[in-house]
Amino acid sequence: MTAADTTPALRCASRHSGPRDGEECGARARFEISCHARPPLVVCPQHLGPALLLTDGVLWPPELRLVR
Ligand SMILES: [Zn+2]
Image 1 (tube, rainbow, N blue to C red):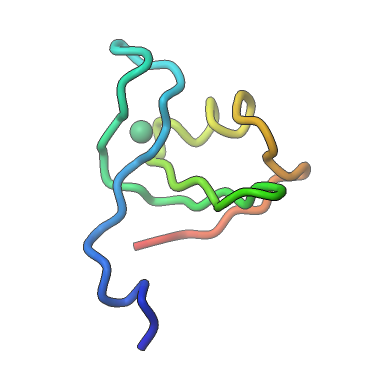
Image 2: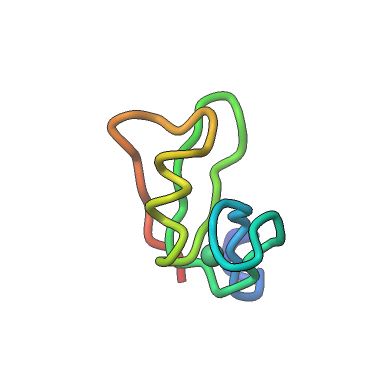
């Protein structure tokens, strides 16, 4: 069992777009985006697109992993 198995559901870490721009989304994360030289970014489906396009360091083409 890894640390990830004992962690509660991840929350979306995106701060891009949305009605309350600048605040953390907080929705349940479904995707993990691999980033260059930084920890992966976990996001909900609504923020997957904006995060891919706007976040610094996202690998291209994107490397995604489904998280549960
Ligand atoms: Zn989100």
